[in-house]
Amino acid sequence: MLRVAVCVSGGGTNLQAIIDAVESGKIRNTQLVRVISNKHGAYALERAAKAGIEGVTVAKKDFADTESFQKALLAAIDEAKPDLIVLAGFLVVLPQELVAKYKGKIINIHPSLIPSFCGDGFYGLKVHEAALARGVKVTGATVHFVDEGTDTGPIIAQKAVYVQEGDTPEVLQRRVMEEAEWVLLPQVIDQIANGQL
Ligand code: GRF
Picture: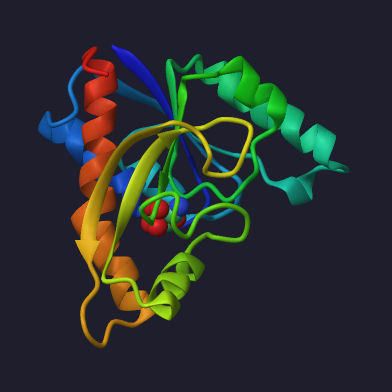
C-alpha cells in the first residue's frame, strides 16, 4: 500500500478526484493517510473528513516566524510517514529541507502545459488569465516532481485542453480541471503505486 499525504490550500477538487478514484478502484494499492491544509477551514478539510481521512491544519499565521511554520509543516508530514506527498493546489513554497528529504516523492499538479505559464506568480486564475492574454489555442495541465524551484521539476505527465472562443479565465480553469487535472493526477498516483513509473 502506497501511503499518500495530500497538501491543500483551498476547495480541494483535486483531492476529491483522488478520494473518488481510490474509492472506485481507479487508484489501486493506495491509502490516503493525511490531508494537510495551510488554511483553517479550507473546504478540502471537509472533503477529507467525509472520506474518513485525518485532516491537519498548519497555518503560517499561527507561528511566530517562517522557520517555526516550516518545522511544523515538516513534522505534520513526517508524522504521516508518507511514501508520496501530493501537492493538490498547495499555495506554499516548500521548505528546502522538506524537498531534500522527500526528493522524488513529491508531486505537484499545475494547470498549464509547463514550461508555459508557470513559475513564480503563476497560480490559480492567474495561469488562465495569462494563457488567454497570450492567445494560446491549447493549454492543459502538468503533473511533475517537485524540486528546489517553482514548477521546475521533471515532468511526469501532461494533458492538453483546447481553449474555446469566448473563454473567460473561470470557464477555462473549470475545463482544465475537468478534462485534465482530475484525470491526470489520479492516473499518476495509480502508476506510482503500482510500479509503472
Ligand atoms: C488547481 O487548479 C491546481 O492545479 C492549482 O490550484 C487549483 C486547486 O484547486 N495548483 P482545488 O483546490 O484542487 O480545487
